[in-house]
Length: 86
Image (tube, rainbow, N blue to C red; front, side):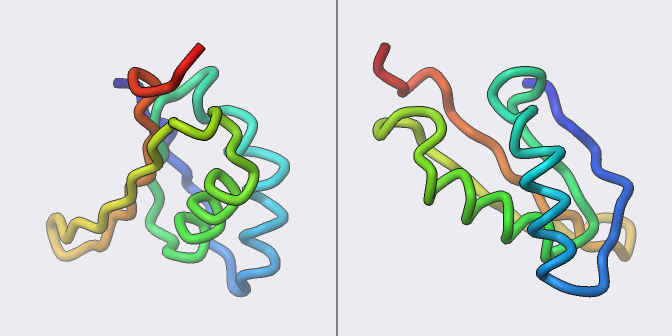
């Protein structure tokens, strides 16, 4: 599984949503299987857009998780392409 590690952090959900729509959303499923960020707004926006647009067919599964590692919250979003129907 390949992960895109996002260095950006935004002040507002609107900024995060614009960034996801122009950057990470287009890479997940093509260049990367998953997305790691320190910004909960970015993870939320990516999950919302992936589910709303059903980018990877109706049977694709979108997952999200939050992990506390070395005193830092990390947010993970990934897709399961194996369950997608061709």
